[in-house]
Length: 126
Image (cartoon, rainbow, N blue to C red; front, side, top):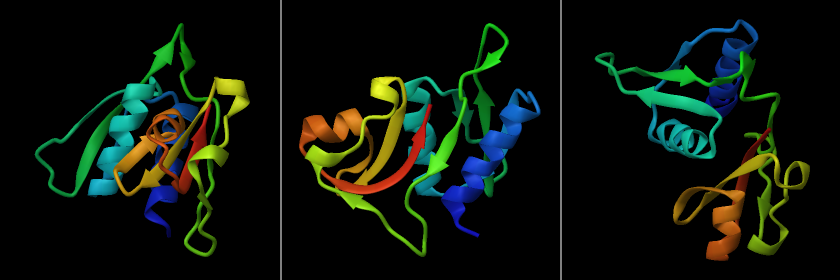
């Protein structure tokens, strides 16, 4: 299975089950994605615990409701989707976010547009 899809599935299922924390298999890409999700306000925090194979993500709830309503994968191993900076999509007229893998690292769509850097569209979240 695709490691990004696995991480997204764990997060979605954690929110559906109303869990406070979920454990995600560790990789540098997932760590950078978790950092951007935290900065964008979709997860509360993430911690690298004693287990070298995974890290814990604390899910964010606002007034008892999950901070994430939906997450969709854009690029898949069988179909990679790339976009120049000018054509990075805006999700729900700016209420959502897209994560982009650029040559400068993982960025949100707004950061990539400001840096005028395109890349692979990983996922959209709102």
